Amino acid sequence: MRYTFDNNYFNDTYQGIPIGGYNVLIDRLLEGVEVRTGTDFFDTVEHEWKKMAEKLVFTGKIDDFYHHRYGELQYRSLRFEHEVLPVPNYQGIAIMNFTAADSPC
Image (cartoon, rainbow, N blue to C red; front, side, top):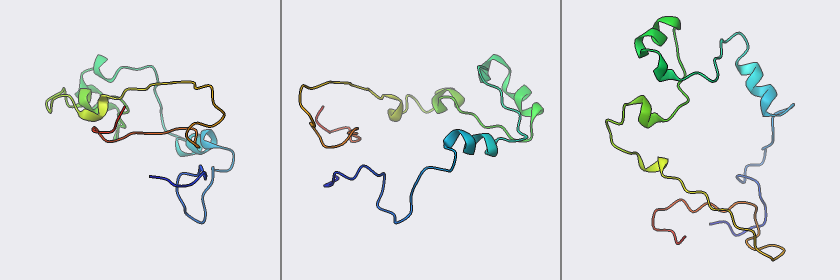
């Protein structure tokens, strides 16, 4: 629970956005790294990907990566609800996350 109108993520003394923004940070982190977008990992046999690179970073659904052998993982059942209320400030912060399964919806 947060009892403040301070909308920072945490209360550390030093926090901020990287100089130039996150795009510049990611661009620099990926310098010299081959990046493929719009590519379905499962369109190619998995061992073929492993032949192409020493290391791979899979950014898809972890359930798919493990071929659903652990069933449907709970975190994948996100539900986003957007509601605009005719009041100036309903909850005092831009986003409210209810993360427990037993939270009232």
